[in-house]
View 1: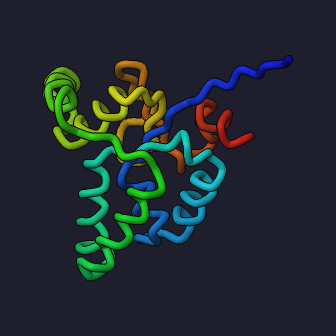
View 2: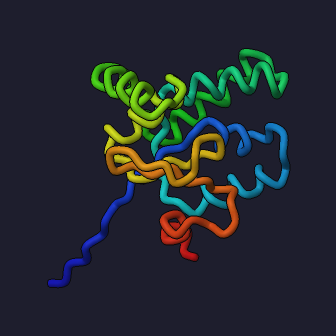
Length: 156
């Protein structure tokens, strides 16, 4: 009997990755977002609930979608990947993170939720690439060269 050990890496997604995948702003980044999302196993991708709320606002305010269209898009994403709850310990951790690292509170909520869910990577263009907290590293999926932690999971 043979056994293979697979280390599942949990990867969280920030709002900008999903917004670009939805076609907001930049066709080059849209293609890159889909390139990354299609190569990562759905089982290892997570979305903090905060991101879904932010995505709704971006789709309505920036992309000009109706609230119904934005809702439908957000529901598709929430069904596609595991959603990380932002209640409980996340708020306290986010407050500490914001105070100690001068992060905006909503970014701190996303980082805290991802870290507490056991994610080791947060894909984000907006946060400081390379920022590490509680075992989580922020990786910009649109940067060149591709960060080694992400490249390892893209088969590059």
